[in-house]
Amino acid sequence: MVMNIIENINKTIVPEMNWAYQKNVSYTQFSTWMECPHRWKEQYIDKIKQPPSIYLSFGTAMHETLQEYMELMYNKNQQAADEFDAHKHFQAGFMLLYKADVDKLGEHFATKEQLIEFTNDGLEIIDFFLRHRQEHFQKHGWKLLGIEMPVLIPPHEDYPNVLLMGKLDLVMFNEATHQVVIWDIKTSTRGWGKYDKQNKLKTSQMVMYKRYFSEQYNVPIENIDVRYFIVKRKIPENPKYAIMKSRIQKFEPSSGKVTQNKMVKNIKSFIEDIFVEGSHMYNTDNIDRILANTDKCSSKWCQTCVTKNDKKIT
Image (cartoon, rainbow, N blue to C red; front, top):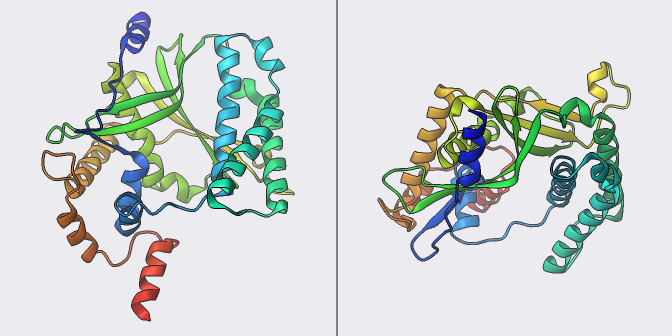
């Protein structure tokens, strides 16, 4: 069983996209449509670029730093991981990403105070991670199967040229239980509360990865677990409970057959809504009909709908 799972993963060749007659959709694209079709149209039809965000720069730099540490620990040795200057790597990566966005935008989009705050928050997260790493990731008995492992698969049998694309942050293998564990790293200001954990648009991402990773890499779905690894920028100054002092939060969403089937149904409906039947071309007539009948989206913070409704009032 162990060798079968690892061999199946190692021998899988994820196909290349053929941009002439194929189109890919990401989970972000799907969740944007589900939350606000108007914002989806702005981004994917009108090609209106979203403004850069310090949160995105921070999150990307943190992802890359944690992934680099894990790569060294599992694929090289613990000494190499210990010698890796994670603090310097994060700080340099964060500033590089921020400056690249400033160059594209032509102006700063964060204050000096914000940059200092986010940098210090990141360094404190790394301090905490290095002190408590063994509580979350053990070297003995585990293999790192991949970082940013690709999934590229048609989720709808009637639309073979529409491919769902995803990148898996960390894919691990437990040699004792024979379980594949897919981790998604998230950065958060204060962690996930009850609302976040119940938000299907957040948690369905890992349900989707579980289902399609199983199909792509020929791994029995019962041998796959999915988990979120959430790092928190802020913790309470005077935490009431010891757990509130932690900058790390783990969450395992419900991903059973019923949840998977609901997710697959929603993905298929999304594809049917936006693509010409059997094609990879957008069905602009149907998209326009849906937009005409969708006045408000499901997010009260949606700037697209706020702007649209403000224009309507004036």
